[in-house]
Length: 342
Image (tube, rainbow, N blue to C red; front, side):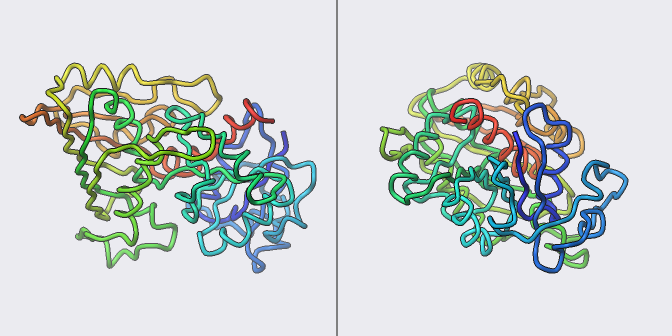
């Protein structure tokens, strides 16, 4: 199946290119970027941090302008690594023209007809694609993956939700790559922690409630879970680490929580890890350098699960923010669409 990457020269776009190299289902047919990059070879247009890691197959591919008119009709899925400001204009253009857009961009994630999907949690929410097509008159559609910090904790919340989860407090320690290649200067982040990331807390407090919600065939009824978030940028390169305090309807044992996480759904899709949630028993894990690449960067790693008294548990979790938290999540969504709808 032929695919394209929109915004292919940026940090997340490069991750898409890496993950699609030798993909068993998908073949890159189009790479797009801004007007300043269009017409150049991909090797000249994309400033890779480690140039020798650029796949040879794309080095001489000519970058196209990001427009549906520039992408072949043979392409069925396009992966969007565009910033929200551009994505909200461009993605509907592709959807109208019949493409499925697997989008990492933040715009419209919580709109009623927009599927916001983590395939291990809510694959049935893909039904919103039909609602979306009917309401917007599109021949294609848009499917979203969550924010990089929201997707780190949401699989663990989904595992614990059946145990009576009703309230979550979370504090994040988020890597600089989450801000993009030029997002945080060295003078701002070295020897420092920045206790604010624009709109991040709102995303963490709202996106998981939609993902955990029930789809009735027309809309999603959000889960009745209260979430309060505090987000911090820290001087790690990749891997968002999060500390959570959870309250339940009644006491939940540490072993029951670990069992629920370890036994959480896994999928038979090319990008899916063998284990969605990996639970570590060491007192000092997870750690970004040691755990972010677990499951080729697609597993969530949890640890330090502790009883906090009064029907409460606390634990830590971590995922690779540009793989599970961005490009890998979109690729997994596209695999789900290809398996069930194309």
